[in-house]
Amino acid sequence: MEHQAPAPLSLFLVFADVPDPRGRTGRRFSVAAILAVVGAAVASGALSLRAIAQWAATRSKADRLQLGVFRGNAPSEATIRSLLHRLDAAALDQATDAFLQRLCGGLAGKAMALDGKTVRGAREGTALAPHLVSAVLHDQAVTVGQVQVKSLGGALTMNAWTSTAPHSASS
Image 1 (cartoon, rainbow, N blue to C red):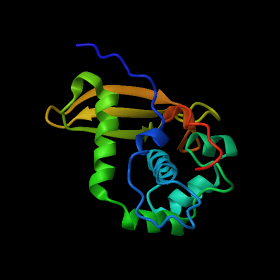
Image 2: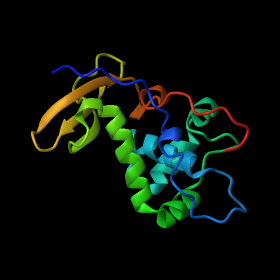
Image 3: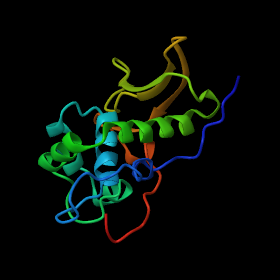
């Protein structure tokens, strides 16, 4: 059975409906922007909150805009940690599930994992090794999709995971 890939969906939009547990004052970044940064960083191989913040700090302004970071620098480790500790896990799970349902179309309701790996031993000269992202059905142990994405030294390019975040003057 052949599945047609859906149009790209911005990570910023994926997390737009997750409620913000923080007070209204002092918010520099929206929940959606912080979660989009976390999602893209983790998909790019960041394994800790410090690594997520470092990954975000090294992105270009254009990359940060795609993730919904509209003002200044990327969120700090402390900002990310504070939000994640207070976040409604059920709301985050619901947003993630909705994203995966949209991503997988006709595979709705199936347990699935998304994983990215850099192919070892596949470098040619000075070129980077290929990076593959796969979707696997848990109950059948079947890969239902795999694509090669452009990698920048272990970090996926923003276009591999996002379309364009909504254009706005605030985050």
